[in-house]
Structures are given as structure tokens and as C-alpha cells.
Image (cartoon, rainbow, N blue to C red; front, side, top):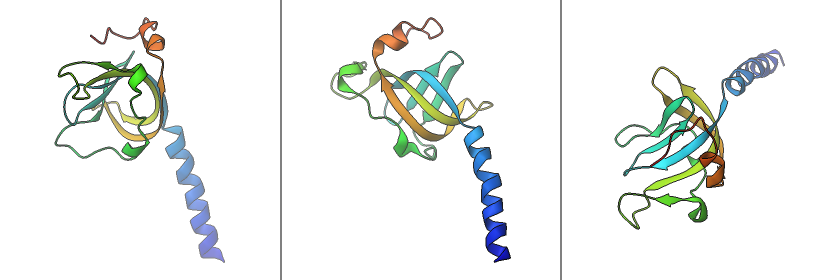
Amino acid sequence: MRPLFGICFCLAMILPAAVYSAERRCGWYSSPTPGNLILTDGDGEWWIQTQGRPDPKGIDNLPAFDDRQFVETNVPGAGYGYGCACMTVVTSARQQRITRVIAGDILPLARCRNDGSLPDPD
């Protein structure tokens, strides 16, 4: 019985640390080129995915772009462009990277357009 208690105690100590290190970031969610995803908020660009580098943990938790809330850029029909999103993520501030995606939601474009702390996405 004691080993089970020890395991449960260790998990109870570790799990809150992961939850507390998560942060909610909102801003321009973009796919500028193949294999690259970026979230740009008032603190700068947070690289989610970079071509040729390993994907962050939880990449399947990224929100899918919404065709109605998506501005296409670059090659028409290629799927490159941007939208507005909020994501709960774990970051590496030193590398300006998102290392884990916990959850995300697509927001109306107007939300980011009206946010004075965000740069113009174009």
C-alpha cells in the first residue's frame, strides 16, 4: 500500500507544477509558410512549429483555422495566412517558443484587429 501512496503523492506534486506553468496567450495565429506556425501577441512572436524542428507536445490541441475567420496570404489556395486565437500553452521565454499546447480557440478577427497591443498582421 505504501508504494501506491508514494506514487500518488509524487503525481500530486508534479501535476500542479505543469498546470501553473501554463499561460493563456491571445493574438494573431499564422501559417506563413509550409511547416511554420506562429502566435503573435503583445509580447512578440511565439513559434509553435518550425519546419525541420520537432513539433511541440500537444500539437494536436491547436485549434483548426476557421475559413470564415481566416485571411489568406502568399499563394492563393495554399492555406497560408492568419486568424485570431487564444491558446493555453507552456513557453520557453528564452527561445520565444511554445513548447506545449494545452488548448486553443479561434476568435473573431475583429478581436485581434481591435487589440491595440498587437502589431498589424499584414
